[in-house]
Image 1 (cartoon, helix red, strand yellow):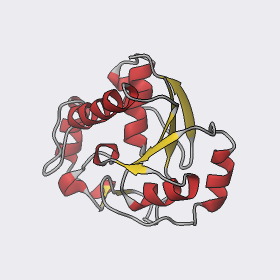
Image 2 (cartoon, one colour; image 1 turned 90 degrees about the horizontal axis):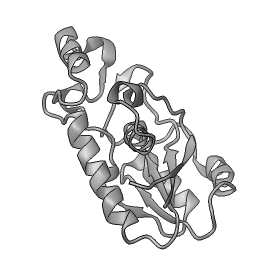
Image 3 (cartoon, one colour; image 1 turned 180 degrees about the horizontal axis):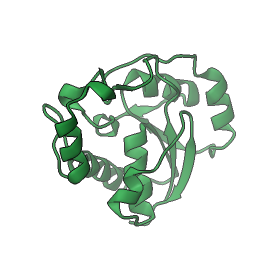
Image 4 (cartoon, helix red, strand yellow; image 1 turned 30 degrees about the vertical axis):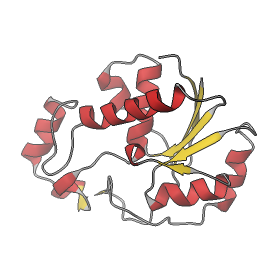
Length: 174
């Protein structure tokens, strides 16, 4: 199964802010990016998207009938949402760094919980898919899927970086 992972365009938020599942608008309209991305996608693609505005607007510009799924939302950063990373208590950041997969952010979720919901989504959709799938999602979702597909250790896939508007094509055989 071919998966096309697309990171949303840049949201309208200050640099250095932890925004996870906060619903933010886009800094710029998504139409020119959508036009570029459409040239890289097969005609028969089924497109799924996070329902958050920064993904939904690009999904609507890319496809006539995108399907939204809550499981494609970015990681829920709980009490850290909309705080400057520099204002998050150092002790909490250190605890997360010491146990990046299983540390649960206060009021939020762990990377393991996010990973589980994303893998459940892909298992549900790829078992039924007759055509390639595109996902308009977030960097955290892309890290999980690229890491799983390439069988990377957690420290490696958590360190991956995807620019806004990036498209990654994966062969999903899990």
